[in-house]
Length: 440
Image 1 (spheres, one colour):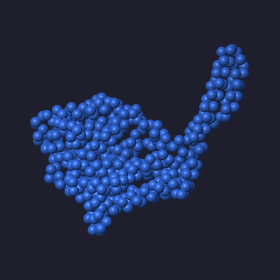
Image 2: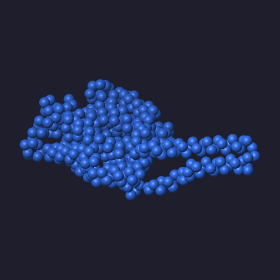
Image 3: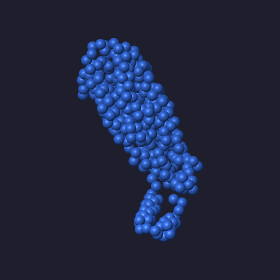
Image 4: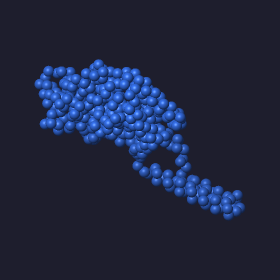
């Protein structure tokens, strides 16, 4: 890289016409071949250097991992296992269900470790994703059964000895999200580990979604009207609280994708004002409105006596009054966690160099996506009492406001990944001469 094209060609020609090289035709032909190859290599390098540089997002989008076929096969074993357990009359005791569930998960871990020892050695989260894909299929079967699309699969678990709160509207939509979105994420991340590819962005989105579902569902089971029906199986769910902590540390410690921006490009991007960045200005306006909406709904569930709060809770979102406690906890989660993030994200879009925003934007996109899916679905589901469902004449307002509230964090995460130069730390980037030395 440090030599010019003419210098290399001259060296090769010097070898061609040296006394040692003039001794035979084979050496002369070899020299011609080397000269041709050197010229072609330098020409291809010159063309590559003239191509436009791509950001970290473009490189990340090239690394979309394939789905893991072996994980699909093992996860689908949940259906016949659930059917067999449902036919055994011995599973009428809560303790028996707990021990059997723990035994099945233990056997599944042994099977995964035996069949995929190399993947687990490379990344222990592979075993977590495979086991959780098994439970995702179980959750999907529970949701389909509660809505009448399947029968005789998980009756023993939801009606008597397992988790009866999964039969609530909120529990059903949590199962739908886990059985669809989380399941695809598990397959993609397991496939990435098998192919030794990065899955950091997918992992951050899953981390936020998984954590939000637990932070609302578990306390809601204790504080809501189903607090008297907590079974021993509830303590298995508490163990899941440890998984996001461990998995989050490992995912955050993974290396980011390669950055192709030079310090000059980063400095030029960070010198632009907000008026020169209309997309960022629009996102800031959204964040302000979302923060105000978050504060308003937080006041509503805290029994604010104003006429606006009274009208909203009775005419637009009566589900917030449901005694199951899930909607109230959801609004409080928004108030204490989403509201500070919206304020900090608006700051990061205004002032450059906030390198933390792309990662946390993905986390909150997963959290808000899961929360809004469950909240919107439960607000109109038949399992919700009629008095707490959204009135038909306010459906449009309810769905538009909540849909925009869910889409905004995803647009923010997309913006951070698509053009991350504004959020990079220019001082931490390698200088052009350093890059040249590394290439040499």
